[in-house]
Image 1 (cartoon, rainbow, N blue to C red):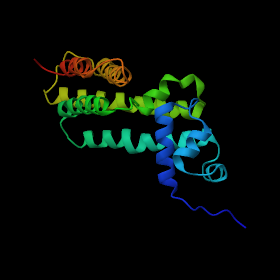
Image 2 (image 1 turned 120 degrees about the vertical axis):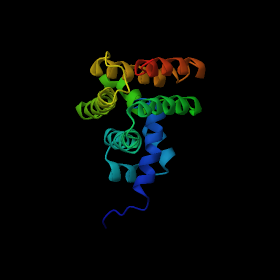
Image 3 (image 1 turned 90 degrees about the vertical axis):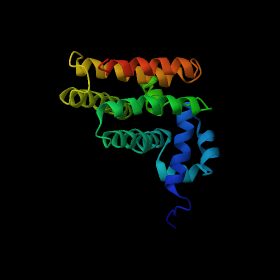
Image 4 (image 1 turned 120 degrees about the horizontal axis):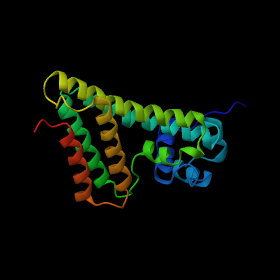
Length: 195
């Protein structure tokens, strides 16, 4: 008799994503995943393959639902300076509200990148590069419109803004309080201001 799925795969993937996001790949055990998703071992393996395949699907879900969605919303603002400011404000607000100190799943995975295969490395690298490219485009458009300083280099400044976002996400996992995170965010905002 063929295997039939008796659960919602998207809901199970969402729950697995939360486990990996909170714990990381290595510390998240199959027992943790089974407990959180409510699946039995056979259902998990039949639906997702092994732990590695489930991790890849969870990371892709996070990338699609959170990172790509956020960048699309910010790009739709059609105001580069406002988009960058909103990015920083949102990241600080989310980090402060994150009582579990999960941080960013993509950045967390980047910090343990040596433990992952090429597919995971590519997902992380592409995600980080797309954030950097978003900042660079904003700066170039802002400069063309006269809304951002002409003297800043779009590529170098984009890398700096990305580094500040990473700092907020990493340090916000319990090292820095809100005031310090706002200081980092404000440093990023000052880079793109004319005054």
